[in-house]
Length: 470
Image (cartoon, rainbow, N blue to C red; front, side, top):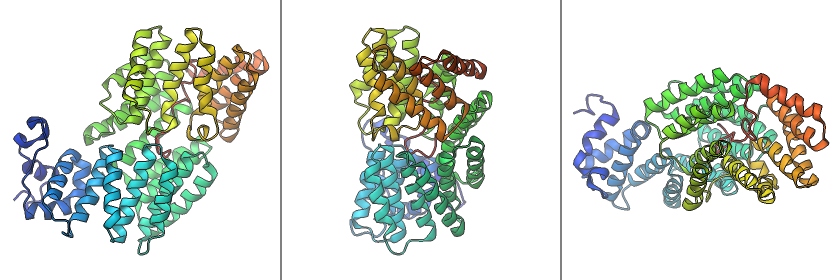
């Protein structure tokens, strides 16, 4: 009756799972009775339900699949939606497994393309870019794809190029995907392409323009909440990078309001974004307030959250708290499957702690690893590590490593001559050359911009796991 009256899918779903059968209440896997009507309704409602009530959607989809035979043609529909909701819940490894199971037997070209996109994206979110590319290429070779699906896969390929540091190629690929998406009238694909172009742009004004265009395309799309949050986070970081700190905080708080309203698992990402913005401004109490409020997060965000909290603790001389956060990461082995970009704050904290203990060789090595070929390209904010690495290397008389750090910083500043990056490059070169005037000019910038002169803060943790948004 509710469904027939046009009730919201999440309200209908809530009536299908009695509270006493819920997993938390029962303390074990609940078996929800699902009849034929429910299966049919779920196949239609799932695309919206997974964005509005993902936990309910997962419960119903699993229950429905348990009661369908292997030959039932509706299984593929439910399996595709299960993979999608697991991705939405940021359980990327489970989403990948579910998607791979479906791809092994499904023949519907559109569903195969959508699932391949999701599987490749899940691989990217766990730092496995090299495995994601063949998935995308294989999906693009399938016959019968719509123009919309082709555009979406090309946009995802552009994101992989971005994440591996091939920015010029990524921008070309993203622009091609944008043209395809606009021709197909696919607003979501166009928004993903615009997000990738914005990440590749070297001028901040151009970046913000592309982000605003993408946000305008998906403003009313409930299925685009995840991308909207990523774009709002990116915009906040870009505003911050141009020394518009107050506007950046306002933008991040808009994202927080959206995340709370949507009940999305992305809430922790927004909280960590706010925490990082406060951290780089030296507002450490505010940063900790946001990080403490962040819910249990996916691996990548846990690494960033523990890293920021450890870094603040080390700077404050609270070695017990710092050690606890660093131990948590080691004990839970959170670095497995995470991209190097998510390590930055942890490495800064470990390096600074080792330096305070007088272990300069260890402190240098922790940061130097990030500059190795194959790793440096995967860290969008690696310039934030250049100054502390150069300083530590010079303290040990390792002029070669210090020069590597300076060249990396200068290369980044040349590619994108934003005031922040230029100041970091000057600071680094000033240290290497013993040029006090050059170093002091960087200090003047940090003071004038209201930034805390904290090693790595301000450019060290940028970028999400997919390299398309912050």
